[in-house]
Length: 194
Image 1 (cartoon, helix red, strand yellow):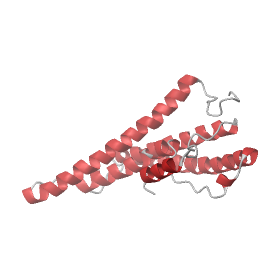
Image 2 (tube, one colour):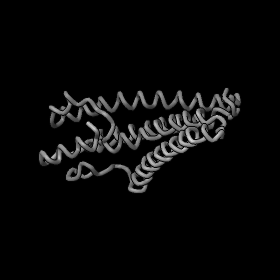
Image 3 (tube, one colour):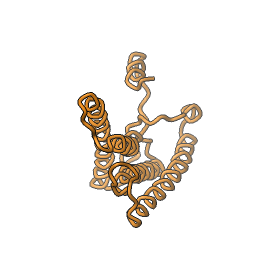
Image 4 (cartoon, helix red, strand yellow):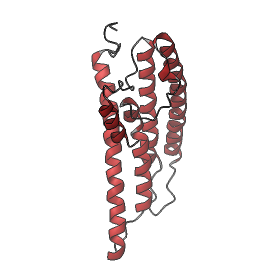
């Protein structure tokens, strides 16, 4: 890593592009599942007065909601849009701040890997036992669980990726630079919904 460029990755360029692409695709999939929720809910709402029934529409909407939420985690984390409580760490500078960032990323990475492992194990168990959904359509449960476990696995990869980056002296890529003007601060607050 170049000391002059703290945002530079220690990973080979092909791997960096691959990981960034994975996070972006995960975010796009989350968006597509969000759109599918809208389409399903619209079909359910418009179908009732017309006497059209969408079998297991509620089940599909709930599975799409879980997939959207979990697939969006890594992209949200890497974009710096995930909620962070930085009251203490934002007041630090230099090596102290880097140490606290590393500790926070270690704890977050450990939690993400733990949950990703157990989500993957739940998914694998559902596949091995051929668990079926209890709703109108007896769908194998491992299919809708892929969005949940896949999203957590991608989040774990993103957190470990960021941990390695910060350990080798890089600045956290999820942190946005401080606003230059009061107008920029207001614009960011408006965009984030704060």
